[in-house]
Length: 569
Image (tube, rainbow, N blue to C red; front, side, top):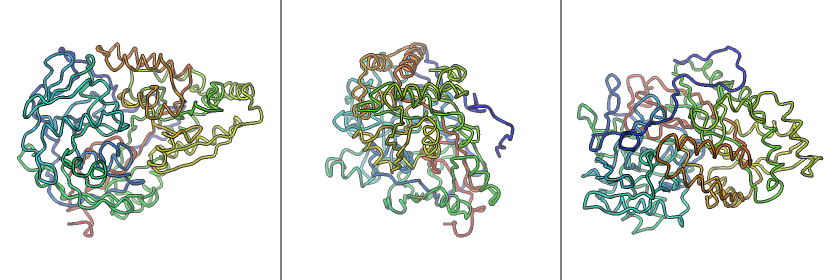
């Protein structure tokens, strides 16, 4: 079990044991580190004595808006659908300790891939794969899915994964090719999963028969589990997909477990009580105090700690006053006490994060040492607060400022979000906070119905978040009034950057621009504490902020000998 240090901490920790830098060196051919073309997917690490059977149970904060793979891309939607109902061409190998260290890839719907030239990827599809309704997955499904995903008219948040793609076409009866606009050495990493939905393959026949509404409600994919019941106000139930294609090293079929249940809209205290009663298998604590309190009452569980890899912070609506004035944006940036927030909410275990990439991605953007020297990020707040008040007065807000602040209450970083009004009040900024479910929150963001918003804006894969939040045509940046030709140019260059050093240079310049123009005020990477039941076996963290395993579920197993009698089935 992980033991927590009681030593005093100063500011954000500079590093967390076990979290390696996220740089991945290109292969000699210029492509990202990945399994050689045609290599079989890695077998899941086999714990001693995996046993089939049992139903895993998890609580989610909030509920998926629906089961559409390209809509349910974060929060409860991601945790319910990713790795259960749907699968991509390639994904990360979640059986390793921390897939973010070097992004090892796992072939899924692609049986193999090759790169005949620097801008062409040829994917040979796995044969014999069935959708949950018994129909075969075909190359037509794959081509249509990618075109549907990347079509700007559909406005899918995760479509930035395919921004480097020029076209997708059928190569033959079992293969498709994706032709890029320019060489992209991280393309396979871009389309894989992580803490947002990967580029999964959907059933074209379901869309043809019922349109987006059918995709929203049926949940038909190729994943290890198939839908039994979708109830966003209660419990979503899944059963093992008997026709699933994958087997372990001993030839036993995956998944090991018989099914999974996702209990939605379970708040933190209810989830902790259910965990202590043995009713659910995982619990995530948003603060160290929450963990310590439950540990005193219920000692018989294992603890892990990790950073989510989401750089969180305040996103400004610069389309209207007061934050169309950079002085007001700078004032908020300076007034935020990131170190106090870390100590108070995260027990000192958080990680300072600058723009574009999270703090765990060392060697990109600003280092922790550099951030500590910058106004707003530095630990001594006296000068920052003085300058924040001066800027507000200069901008015409000497008597204070009232702002509408929105946040998604389902996120694991919600306690961090809830602390923001406390730090801003000292500068004379009065905050009207509006916490909502994911669907309502995202609608407000798209409609520009806010002054400031708490968002995950930095990502270990920069192009997952950058286009949506900071490119002029982005799904959120349009309403936020961000239209910056220079930033657009740099983001476009990043899409086609070849050498890793060139990518790092562009990320650094984008980070510098965000510090200069203050389109957002980044705060830090949340530190999350996770409890696991003794019978819950084989799990490696998906690095999410909710108590569900996401894409790890297909290879987990339950030791029913250790489970309470009421859970054995």
